[in-house]
Amino acid sequence: MIPDNNEITITNLHEFCRKNGLSFNAMHRLAKGQSKLKAHRGWTHRNSVRQREYIKTYDGFIGPDGNAVGTITNLAEFCRQHGLDNTHMVP
Image (cartoon, rainbow, N blue to C red; front, side, top):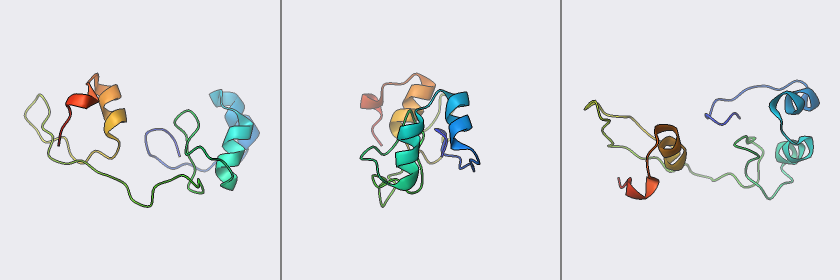
C-alpha cells in the first residue's frame, strides 16, 4: 500500500524496492507478515501483523475556504501534508 492509502499490485518486489529506494528485506517481511513494523517508509502491506483491526477516523474539520474537509483517516499525515501542528487539531 502506498503512503497515500491507495493499494497497488507489485509484480517484482526487488525492482520495486530499487526504484523507490526501499529495503527489500523490510518490504519482504511486511508482505510475509513477519515484521514487528507496521510500515517501512510509509509503505505497508495488508498482511502486516501490526495493522490495526480498526481505523480511527476524524470528521468535522472545516478548511480555510469554509468547506468541510471530509473524513481524515491519518491525522498526523494530513497535518504534515498541510503544514499543520497536529497537537492543535482537536476533533
